[in-house]
Length: 265
Ligand SMILES: NC(=O)c1ccc[n+]([C@@H]2O[C@H](COP(=O)([O-])OP(=O)(O)OC[C@H]3O[C@@H](n4cnc5c(N)ncnc54)[C@H](O)[C@@H]3O)[C@@H](O)[C@H]2O)c1
Image (cartoon, rainbow, N blue to C red):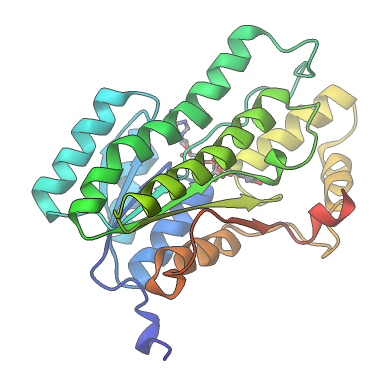
């Protein structure tokens, strides 16, 4: 039976990282609309704090690559709510769009991107599983990318970091399923979603190619069979489904939301 009033995550407690912008903010807004008590974290206190207040979420400043801060944030959530049902490991960076093919990527750039995009997801899963187990189970959603599935020689570090997230998700799912924790774990793979991250990529790529940013945007658009960039809510609705009990039989799976981009190979 479908739930009344779309309250699909009513009274669940949800933590969304990188909630101060783009996809994370859309996910937090949709969670609140669907009845969840929602906490967003972001490395940037401003605008994170202000936007959290606007949508009715709690806010913590958090660098997701810092394990001590993960422990602290989870403890504070436990003290206030006594549980955690949903964790969305969404925070991430694109890294430099310039000079990042496999030969020109610096080790420093590589390590920075792995730390923020991949180490962070490991730390989030590692530290949240027990709180979720003690809550009777839950749903972890890890934000990967179609960059984890196709070659990305222009953003080498980014593609590899998102592939690590995809693989880690399967291990977490299997571990949780076979240890009786009732915690599910799935990955979501956006294509090109109009957010500040994508706008930055257009700008850097157009500067590199020496063409107007509008032309670069059209080049990117040409790779999407459905002919439109995605909106943050396109990802938020997928995450909401995976967070809800309607997805109770789904774990260790990969959900591509890309307007058909993957069909191009
Ligand atoms: N936009 C896209 O087209 C697209 C495509 C595929 C995957 N993704 C992924 O979706 C997620 C959200 O991306 P977005 O497009 O909304 O980007 P965005 O830049 O708009 O938002 C990312 C947020 O993460 C925060 N953040 C960055 N580093 C952090 C850290 N160390 N600790 C905590 N917070 C940190 C930023 O402050 C920002 O608020 C990312 O993981 C990204 O890789 C985005």
